[in-house]
Image 1 (cartoon, one colour):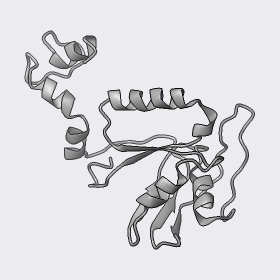
Image 2 (tube, helix red, strand yellow; image 1 turned 45 degrees about the vertical axis):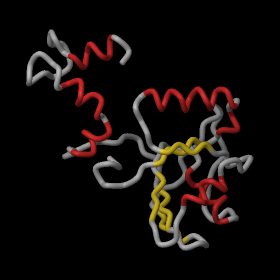
Image 3 (cartoon, rainbow, N blue to C red; image 1 turned 90 degrees about the vertical axis):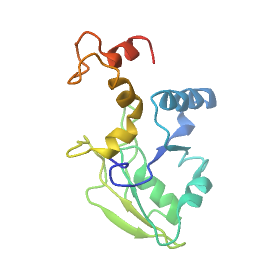
Length: 171
């Protein structure tokens, strides 16, 4: 979705204080193994780790948007950036997960001139009318698909499907 909109995506791994450095490194490696090349920024709203790096990303006059599931720490991150509890958050649930709090979008002007949009938690993300962004994001699959036996291969069950063979071989 970001690629289709000509937006540079960033992956923010929040709540890194809840796992070991080794587990964090393993998760980042798993992300990389899927072919995702977006910049990854681990951070913790509790310890402050990664917050300076996040601030450094935010350029004056540019607009940024936080997207993610409910309870991942988007609003808490904004409160940390503005230096006060400007927006309501709730504690974690009995399962240790964050609780949905934000009910509407907020556009904030940060002290260095960057603009940041806080959004309610997403329940799903749909891709409609995508083309170039999907091709760029999944270039490896597109490359394999040119080697399929049939030009109209759906990559689900056809014999001679290069995509299915790549999956089977761990490629």
